[in-house]
Length: 245
Image 1 (cartoon, one colour):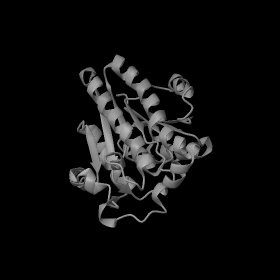
Image 2 (tube, one colour):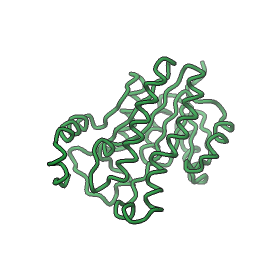
Image 3 (tube, one colour):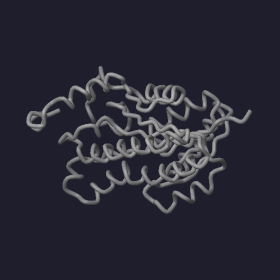
């Protein structure tokens, strides 16, 4: 029986590495992409030896939109699942004051992922099967002064995934929006995270795997963030603008 496969875009992020291990553990073949081909090769070799699955890897900078079709043409197989784990928080002050910084955050978290996932959406729609997973963020649910450039890009991504899910439902294609809360990763290394509501990449990987198996629409991880954000959304704007949340 042919093994299922998953394409992981942004494979060198902490969350993506955990996802790769989780799916390989369950006998999925892997297709990995990242900008750093040397590190990607090391990751691929490690996964092959550890799990005895097929692992192919491809260089991709998601901001090079013209390379998206080239990637698809070069894939050894059109995967059953596509996961976009690309993300870049940037520095809020830099984003406020420098166009180049602002653009990098917006394009990395929104424009690039939208273009690539749209290409796979068209392929899956024709095939009438598949799963598309986008890692967004609870930061996109309501804007905060501490990260609203990043948050607005993630908000756009969340809306895109919702529309895509609506479009592809009748074509037997599931679209999953992953909304992590605070996570201990390289991206948050310099931030002081609240311990009780912060999680680790392995937890997110397990939640994503479970979400695929149960055909979830939205995966909050940790689940408590669903209720935290509901409460935050109930705060009137006249009050919220004065807070330091």
